[in-house]
Image (cartoon, rainbow, N blue to C red):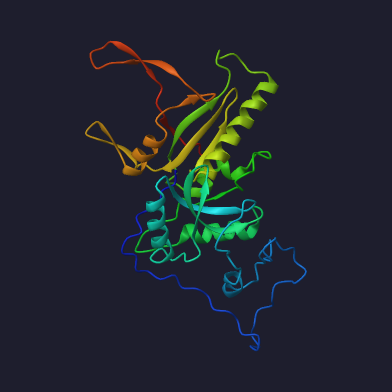
Length: 293
């Protein structure tokens, strides 16, 4: 991620919304249970299978999120003017009139929705946003839920575990960009306490990145925990006549995260030069395959 949306230019496809059911209609589907648990915005925290599309669409999506709310992140920018222009495109051509800008960790993040937890309502709305087809493309296919700005890890979040990425993003989820690793610097086997610290650090790093608008993941290995950003397909990285070709989206992710850091510090490695010699360099970020399970 960063999960960048496709350019929202000359978008013409309108989203067909369900209309509200008339209270006087004899064929009206049963209304949601008034005793159902509701979130802080007055919306049910679960959706019944028998609800109609109209009833689901009546779940109000607030136009801004507070500091204690989860939101669906569409994209982010370091340039406030660019973010404002993109927001207008999202609200109009992008068919998400309730989108808004908020500042997360110094970045301008474009988001939609406001939820007090990872409720079923939030997940269903995320699926709807991801599946929007506009002008023949799915501009929000890499949208994701981000936690409140002040929230740190409260244990593992399955949605952020790289092992679950393929289930969330489909067969096009082939690669991701590794940008950080947490583990012992002497390559010795960590103690259980150290392993827990490394896992916690990786999860918190992924959370902080998501709060900044990056589609970040953690991956816990036997001795180390890694942090990655972005979901990339074979079209984003492939060979043409023996030369690696990368998409603009992948290049942009590398520009934002040029290095792979160990416990927050640069890794010095030896690299071979074209003349056959070696030179020391800072280890760059690199693509890794997304596990199939």
